[in-house]
Image (cartoon, rainbow, N blue to C red; front, top):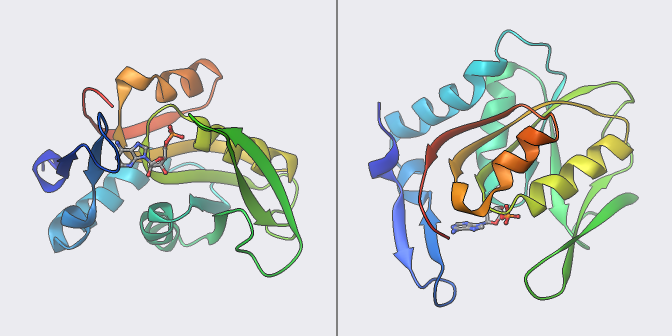
Length: 175
Ligand code: AMP
């Protein structure tokens, strides 16, 4: 099943020059959502995965479903200041300024094999920060699964070159 047509593309959102790839049109489609989750899981179904980590906020929706499908626990990777307990965090560069992702300090037992999930990889800055954070907590990254790749921004390629196994379901040209 081709999932491309279930993604809504919004030119100049949230700012001029960006085409926002909206997955809500995929999520509300029962078959599309199930197929997307199955495809995100497929390359990792036979591998040992101890936990799935999902990046706020759309990574929670797909990552939660992936964790359920694999029958493993879920780790929310949240934006700065949202988690209620003790955290460790990792800063990363944005086009203007920096941002920070955080997890609770007790989310990973050292040596656990973690699959990272998000809706989309662009520059890869967010995913790389999440990987650094999870690895600092002792995780072994089994791979990374994204619904959408924006290959022109090079994030998936950079992760691949860093020897991470990257799986994406579809590409869109441009930003
Ligand atoms: P990056 O760190 O550049 O790989 O950006 C990835 C994060 O930003 C993901 O959490 C995406 O949800 C979001 N994102 C980046 N570009 C887009 C886009 N064109 N459409 C929708 N979400 C995007």
